[in-house]
Image (cartoon, rainbow, N blue to C red; front, side, top):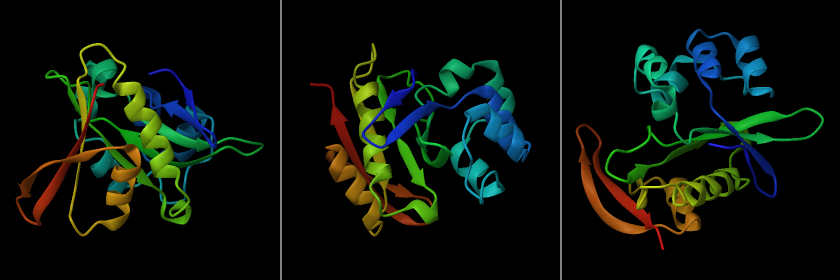
Length: 175
């Protein structure tokens, strides 16, 4: 994915060196790899568990597919800082990409998730073979539902989480 810019954000592609640094809990190397200060809670085991589902070996074996479209949301300026990320869970085989997003707690409620996710979904829908982008969230997750609405997704169904109950599925299709 090329670096993208929005009104307030630079969307920096997540690279294998960044992933390796995060998984090694090496803050200095992670910041050097992305060119920005990372949040205080990063890198941490919760971030790794949420963001990098495949093993490091699987990412190393095929980083272009595994890290396809994954970006850091960076507020540029004199002291660039990472405020969140948008991930696609790898390049899809079936043409339907699933997007996930998160913003550091200290940076929430400023529209960064909506702004960055919209740009990433727009990009994904221009890629060869991609026909739709989906997002999945819980019905009670109001902030996530707002992001999904602002990105222009519509409800496409539901699925059951094995422990937490119903999850809503939204999608935006290529026009």
